[in-house]
Image (cartoon, rainbow, N blue to C red; front, side, top):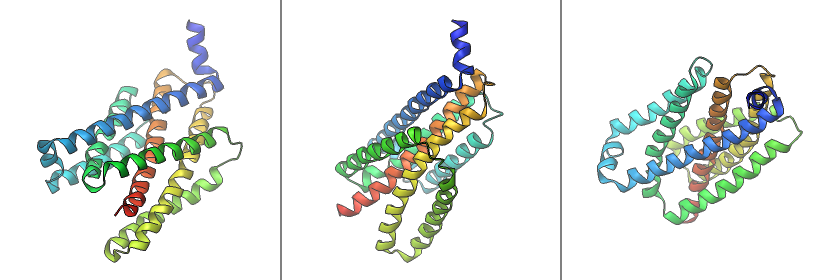
Length: 235
């Protein structure tokens, strides 16, 4: 048993398989937690009033999201695996609170269409990241630049209020985060390889959590951009 346990951490390929499995499990748990919280807040007048009808509280939730992500990514090496798990769970809960607004902005049909389309797109691109022999680092930098471009253009469009630009940014957002899904999946594999055979259980768990967060963010953003597209079509 001890030999099998040691092999799980020292055999790079076996460890890659195990980490990726854990990444998808943790990501799924995070998404499920987000969905439950979003539905619970949207269904409860008390929670709805507490989080969404109070502008100060809602702003606090949004700021808390950024703080948790920064904390998890910046201090991953120094924190314990338990703290990493708690931080990921906290982020999933906070995201669920903010996404509860979708139940009022869009119909259930639009939300379900966006979710299942997101699952298909995410699954396909993540699988591509797993199996491709192409080095995706070359496009990664351009994707990050494109992401910043979308953020800046979205801020500008708040004032312009242009529907064509809104629609175009949604399409570009889906394309960028779909490509980021493949890139991040490959990045998880390379993170595992960078440790060689020198890894302990704490690091193993933290790699699984940070990988889950990366793919979780890709999934959520694809979903948000798709729901904007599907929502426009159903107006």
